[in-house]
Image (cartoon, rainbow, N blue to C red; front, side, top):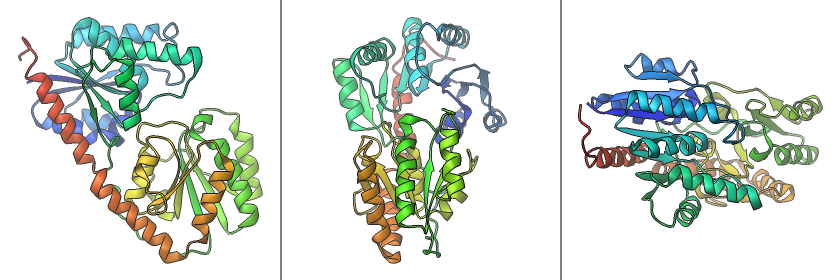
Length: 369
């Protein structure tokens, strides 16, 4: 029996995107250890025999000085459990957890889930942290080709990388949903943390402009406030009738079902799960032209791609969508589902991980149990 540790910033990350892999690793007879802040979704895994370690993590920003406690916690946990391999997800667990794995000579697989948008000194600092955290990785899972290219450049091609379609999407969980029969009021979804880098400014401005010209439209928002400065802006939109705010939903599928399309104006992503989930459910997606968003959209076929941070470009694409007739909108959603079936089935990601875990475990020396 092998000890396999997975480190994530929150329980939802495990439950929503890694359940298939975690349960498969457990079913194969491994001891599976999950490390993240406690959330109710952890019970799903502990009830199935997984071990859980509670740890506190501030997901906002990255400052090695402020994060010293987190780094020491990772050291303590990894040293105590002495896993045969560690799988890290998102930036902080991957950089700090990866660094500790390197120090303790524990094999690890990194999934950074996209590169942060930085320039100047901050970019140099972030690239240095990538070197520190990733340079001894056994494998880096890259969610888009640009991420793979940049990391290979930073690490000078010395670390093995594999390109994966993000987390993939569970095609059964996000089954195709019939397109809304009511086309008289068009509902758009925004599903993300409410913070600048997710494009909330562009979404609100687009909603205001489009609703003024097309009053039969409605722009829904699903997500928690990472930045509370948006509370009054969203309240204004709700009061004026062009926004709806629902907070974060544990199950997003009913929200997808009522929507006609998703708008995802994010500034950076690894591979965006909300686009995959809406597409799998048969909903067209209008997304920014960045790696990790545009990769999941065939422009004019499964949705539309617009210039990132450009409200006018977004408004133009939303209007193009509104000018489609009902059958054209429905077929765009059907095309989106087909693309997910061919290119983004989560089982592909799970199998890649299993291949790499087995490759690394059985070439590692001296660790048996």
